[in-house]
Image (tube, rainbow, N blue to C red; front, side, top):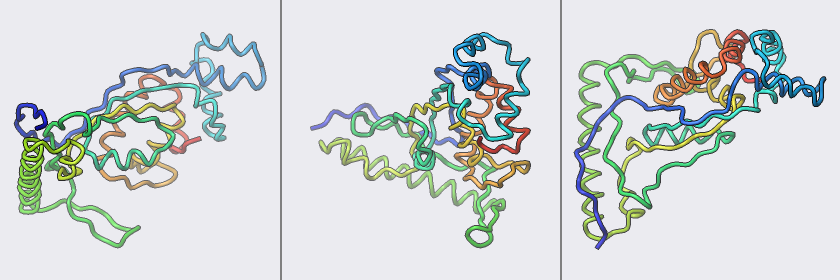
Length: 244
């Protein structure tokens, strides 16, 4: 028989967790990487330079889409979100990922239930549609239906574990609304590409229509990145949020 951890009370939530756990990223990284093209080895002096004095260069690189200087940085985020968010996230193959595994641990019963602000009704055709607020009755239905489904699926999961079924088999009954956790590592250029697609902004040069749940993750990542590289973030904003 398999070893089953004590049953944990099921948790329902509607938010996302994002933490910056490690970084080597600053506006100065953009400068010394860019200036090697004209200064060679003397560009190393820029590592300790004040980036405020060269913010015009950062804006020029962003405006004219000279992208490689923005790759000389690294950020690792811890993300806790529903599995369906991760399936979208991993479309971004310029990130490196390591996710918790249902093969090697008993999965914790934390499940996503859309909050009261989540728009529920899709109107229009594919490629040209909008989301509208749901009625109180629709929100009640979504909450009750998802919670009931989660309870039943997790109970089935535990029953299989109790019967000695391998974790990698038992997990097949669990829904994509289950929360998972991962580390996601990227450079600033990869992050800008992600943000340009996963955050909806009216001032973007190219409109984007992300699913709200991955947008919630992206918004938190952008806030953390803006603190690390404020000049690069400002140039990204000023130039239409286009990835260089």
